[in-house]
Amino acid sequence: MKTLYIDCEFGISGDMFLAALADLGLDFSKLEKIFEEAGLKATIEVKEEQRCGVGGRQVDIIYNQNQPLRTLKDILPLVQNLKIQENIFHKVVQAFKQLARVEGRVHNIHPDKVHFHEIGAMDTLVDIVGAFWGLHELGIEKVYSSPVPWFRGKINCAHGKISLPAPATTLLLLDKPVQDSDFDWEIITPTGALIIDQVVDEFKPGPCGILRGTGIGFGKTRKGFNGLRVYLLEEEITPADEVYVLESNVDHLTGEELGLFFDQVLASGALDVIYLPGVMKKNRPGGMLQVLSPPEHLHTVEDIFFKHSLTLGLRIRKVQRVMLPRQESTARTKWGDVQAKKITWKNNQFLRPENESLKKLAQKTGLSVVELRLLMQDLQEID
Image (cartoon, rainbow, N blue to C red; front, side, top):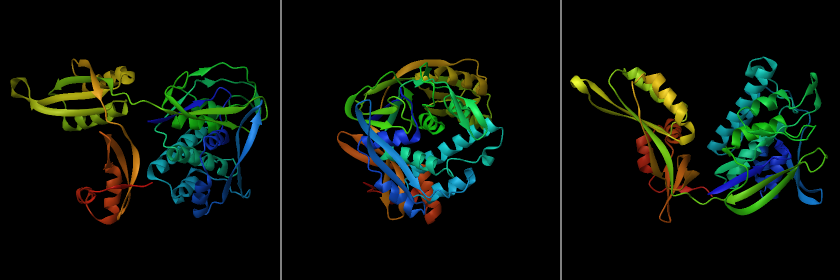
């Protein structure tokens, strides 16, 4: 499994992240064509750069400077017009919604009223789309990061001089591990913090796995090193991991309450939930609620289990789980592209179409999900 480790000891911005991916060997010419086909002329200029005697890459995003101020409602149609994979599209939309929520909180306005100031948000659009597109192109399945360096100082903005980190950056770094540093200038931009917030799966002190490549992306500010290091790794597949099973027999919940329980426990971090019907004491109809939880979410899942069932007790046990290697993929059919899981079993690979993608295709074609699934016997992955 390919993983990426982000070493943001010297900071991170959107252009630094793209430059680091370019230094890994990513070619952005295909992404430029995607923007051009959507009517957005943007050149991602990659050039060699050297800081402190170390070579890397720097990225300049060149576009028409006469861009209007855009809100979230203006940005989302631009993303919709881009011919990118469905999973990338959803991640980009989620990232912009998160940025709008944060900026709205900073300025005490509704997210829909937030104006993206970076030249009509073209910089941010290219940075965010480029980040998710680049990870997909490189086949990255998981992203890890170092703890985030804290910095200080002041910066001039449209509303006057403010302290660093910028308020939006601070909000995006909530719940992230931070550590003190000597930097007294902006080493993490809001876009850089957004990338950390949206792409990082876990924070670790260092990379782990078989090192396959390294990249360095330099920022625009020429103060010291100002470089983002990334490491491409091959992570050995762990044949098994440990999860917790939480169970309780219930006969006091209505169907509506059971449905709400499912929603709440899955939202709390549970991996899966199932209800097994049966007959309880005094011949009452009831059943067993069984929830699967990863270790890091156990206490939260336990609290939600009690809160939304008011059961009198839980049985909790640790079990070993064996998983087949799988990754996100896209398959081409005569009805259109569908998102799928690529599963590996004994050197054979299988594509299993995602149900949500099948539902959208069913609405488009008039066929049922069952018909589409049975007709798609020989899915071909898009290269």
